[in-house]
Length: 205
Image (cartoon, rainbow, N blue to C red):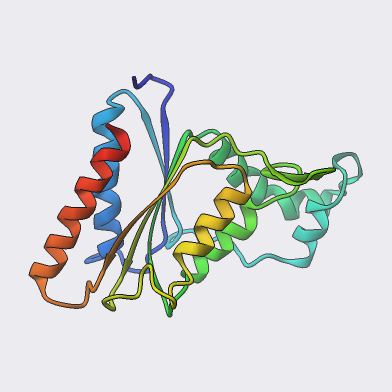
């Protein structure tokens, strides 16, 4: 049963705003989530309008510096990561809507990932090895590719990367929805979107 505290964090990674197939797929998934969580809160982060910077030396240094030893410069270098991690940890469902660019993730999405995979915050190492700390219940990857047959194939370096990252951080349930061949005929795209929407419905039923 849904509760008023349900929160969806949606990440959009497409460089396109108009005519973006990944945004459309994200809208379909978000609509299904809202039907199941009519009183839930939705938070959106638009990477096109505010892409995180590529990870910097000072940021990495800050990640591995004990909190009590952080200098003002290191606090500043990790402040964006602090905000992004807090935003992620506050969500029980994460939706990432992204295209595949050159067989992998858009650079803005990779930059976001590099800010949120953080020792002591989203994972740690103990005597048994790495342990994830995220309490996010569900991650939905809404992924599209213009080339038929690429998502889920041997040249797909987008889906496995994201799935591995979130499982490493402790998320037990990662669901991936694929729509490829979006550069092809419109009827193919519509059929693929309809199938993905049906699959999304089962995630929140």
